[in-house]
Amino acid sequence: MTTRFPELATRRAELMRGGGEAQLARQHERGKLGARERLDRLFDPDSFVEFGVWATNPLIGAAGVSAVPMAARVAHQEAQRVDPDNYLLMHAMGPNVAGVIGTAVAAGALLTLLGS
Image 1 (tube, one colour):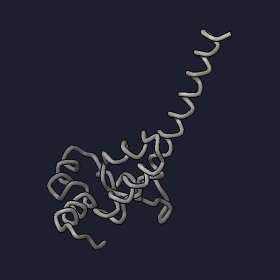
Image 2: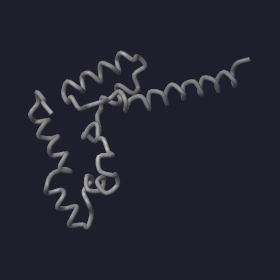
Image 3: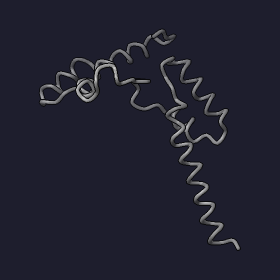
Image 4: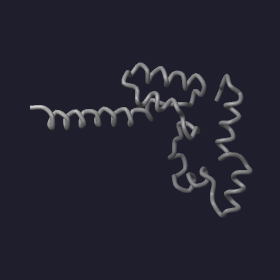
């Protein structure tokens, strides 16, 4: 991965190690596996595809709740400028579609109760 922000590349490498060697050692001391070790046991080899290592991304919210599709696209492009492996739009579509369906159901309920 190439990045214009070396500190993000360093942080990404740390996240790929599960928070670092010290954190992994603490997990092992408690008799637990690290997150990546659990994923390795859960999935068959080469069957798991990870699109990003960041646990949370505030731009997902910006892209997901956007009523204007262009705003979601701009949020996605800004995220990819920082981390080219960052894919927001696929994660944002679930909340976006759920919001549209919820709004339609609420509107239908209001029309049924108030309209005639």
